[in-house]
Length: 236
Image (cartoon, rainbow, N blue to C red; front, side, top):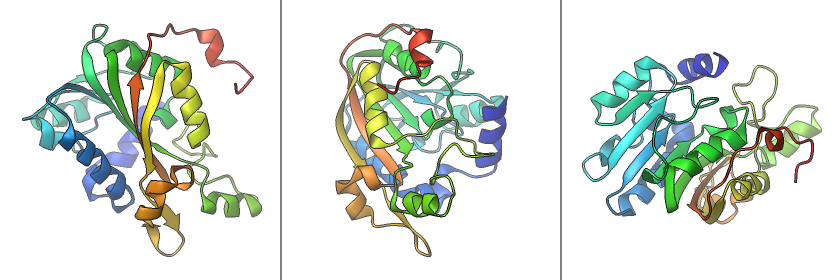
C-alpha cells in the first residue's frame, strides 16, 4: 500500500524527536499531554511510539499503525499497539472507549478524511479531546512557490506522500463536519528559506501562516459516516 510504503521511507531508522523539522510540534504535543489528567489515549499512526513513550506511566496509551515493525517497536516502549489499515478500516475499539485521541501528521496521508475523522469521533467519549498536528499549505513560502509555478509547500503534489491539502480554514471545516469543535489552535513554526523552521513565537499567534498547526478539539456530537459526503464536489 502506498501510504505504508511512504511511512516506512519517511520514518524508518529514526524517531520523531530527532527530526529538527518536527521538533517544535513534538515539544508542544508533549507539553499538552504533560498537563492532562490520567487518561485512556489512542495514538493513531503511532510509528515507534516515540512521541508519547514518556507518558505511559501516567496514561494508558494505545496505538495504531500500518506496519507490524512499528507496532512491535511501540509495544517495547509501553504502548498497547495494534496493526490496522485505518485509512479504510474501522478502528478495532468499542464506541466511546478513549478520553483522548492523538493524530500527529497523519490526516494529510488519508484519502477519505471523513471516514478517518468519523472513526476518531466514534471511539472518543463525549467531550473527549482530539489533539492533532497537521502541515499547513498556506505559508509565506507557499505563495512564493506558486508565483514560480510550483505547488504549495507540503501540498499533495507529484510524488508527494500527502494525499490531502489543509489550511487552517479547511481543517476547521473538516472537524466541524465530523462533530468536533476546536478549543485551541496555534502554530509550531514558520519556515524561512536558509534558516529552516523558526519564528515559533510568531507562529503561535498566527496558526494560519504556520508550517504546522497544533490543535485541541472537543467531541461535541456523534456523527454517522456517509461516503457520498466524502466525494462531494463542493468544498462546503
